[in-house]
Amino acid sequence: MESTKDFRVAIVGGGMCGIACAVGLAAKGIRADVFEAAPAFGAVGAGVGLGPNAIRALEGLGVLEAVMGKSDTKEPTLRSFIFVSGPGQHEVIYDYSKYFGQYGLGIYRPAFLEALLPLLDPRHLHLNKKCTLVTSLASGSYKLHFEDGSTHETELVIGADGVKSNIRRSLVGNSPSNNLVFANTVAYRGLVPHSTLVKAGITTNVNGMPLCWMGRDKHIITFPLSGTDKINVVLFASNYSQPMSPPREGPWVENVPRSEMATTYEDMGGDAKIIIGHLDGTSKWYIHSVNPLLTSYVSGRIVLVGDAAHAMQPHLGAGVGQGFEDVYVLFRLLAHPSTQRSNLDASSTQTTLSVYDKLRPRRANMVLEASARAGRIFDGFGKPGCDAEWARRELAGIWEPVWNHDLKQEVDEELTKLDKKHTANL
Image (cartoon, rainbow, N blue to C red):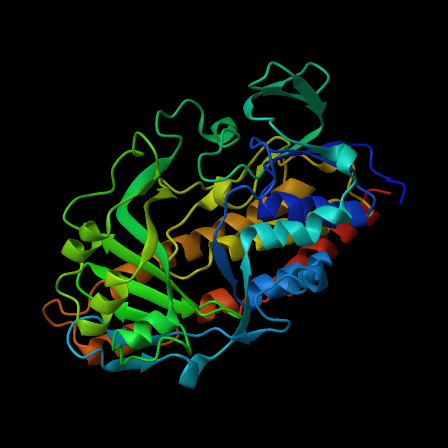
């Protein structure tokens, strides 16, 4: 399809959001060059859960069918959690699915990219291209500078370069932390065969619905990997005694001995200890988040999406879904017939990027804050006054603002306003 646009697009970052954005734009005839720092797409990744809002965004982008072909299941399944006590006998505290059950998908990040990359022209995919700087040109275009010394000119820059985003610096300036903090939370990740747990005498059903094992300053997430005997395990531990700190120096992911987890979770009950005692190949992840929050995701014709804009703690499993919402809104705005270079900038109201900046920060930042609050709830069980009744009260409806937002209607209303402005200017 021949593009009717008079601007070029450069997407910095070839992860899930960057590739989804490129595919959506390509379907509308808008060429987007993707620049990925790694030597291969999907070289690193873990499983992610996609809630109903993320599924709707992918459907709006026209990529849902391809994604489902590579997902854990061939159709959406119930994704809600059952909450159990981490200490003691692991009594059921709250079954979210009985009251607020919703359907979603699980997919491995590399599998997501495997589904979408064939839909793109490989001539516009560039590997080993770490963008270190964006400069403005006298022509009004931008120049991307890469670590290997090469450059690329474009009229629109989409920063999809993740939590450590260099493109974010175009908005926050020379902030030493790049508006990032270590959330004083770590996550231990590992896998364990279900058959191994059964032989070890586990009594909690970990092979059905996802479980959240609530504890004091810690919680554990377990869920079965569809089509395998494996149980995916993520163990969170947080330090709430001090404020969030600057980004951690050194690696953010490292291998650790099982003994470290055994010490951290020694106050958990018997089944939790069985799981920890049989984990294989565990890694420790240091969780970082954008803070202070960005009140704008746009500067001129540079726009942030996904973790580059609103990297958040993972406790609601909503980060990638918010990234897909970003991409859906941007896709709808850029594909609109009236969108051209002259009305891209966010320098005035009712331009393409000003609409994006009106819609996305308020919603994504709300989800970011809600995710941090969810972590405190999951880590609150057993503290003074925080019993099962308290947990049920705090957990009720916790995902509903994330899952049930009508993004399409929101964008439709803004596009109607753009149409009226365009007509008035004819």
